[in-house]
Structure formats: C-alpha cells, structure tokens
Length: 134
Image (cartoon, rainbow, N blue to C red; front, side):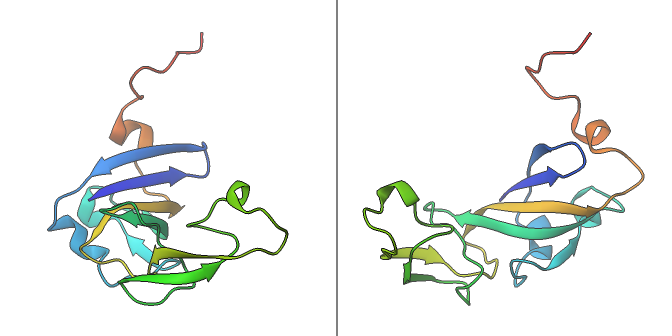
C-alpha cells in the first residue's frame, strides 16, 4: 500500500510505501478517523484518514459505507468531474469505494494532526529534484 502523508504546516506531501503487515493499522478504519503512525516509522505522529483509491482507481467516498464498491448517484465530490456534467443540478451514477479501509486499497491519503519530535523533512529527506533556495 502507498501512503500519501500531507503536512499542513509546510503544504508538502510525502509518499511512503508500506508492507501488508504495516498496513494492518489502517484496516477497518474509516475516513475521518485518527491513526497513530508509530508502527510505520513515524513516532509521535498522529494522522487523520482523508481518502484514497483502490487497486483499480476507484476513489473512496465518506458518505458510502462499507469496504466494497457501489454505484451511487452523485453530482459532486470524489468520483465525478464537474466539467463532464452538462446541466446545473445534474447527477450521474458512478462507481465508488466505501469509506472503510480494506486490503483492496492501493493508495491512502492521510493528513498530519499531531507532530512527533523529528521533522518530516529529516525522516523523508529534502526531496529529490527540488530547486534549492539560495
């Protein structure tokens, strides 16, 4: 599973590939729940689950319960693009993933809400290919 960790202080995002054993801490958690990130190598950090996609690219939605895919009638939000709608108020039936994290999730988006002692830049490095100010 790939984890995308967003840092609201700096506005940066970091990617971390985790094993199936490490991913166990996210299973059966829902969008909006807090998770302690100590088991994946981020001691002291707590994050909230913001969403994700499954192995086939279907996005998770907070208002769809469960772990499976469902075809729901939506007009905005994850799973639909506004530019593809022709009329005001139009809704379309789209397949989306439920709000609970399961084994089928390939990417999980999380946002830091409590910081540890070590900075994320120290843990993940300065970033490759970025221009250095100076």
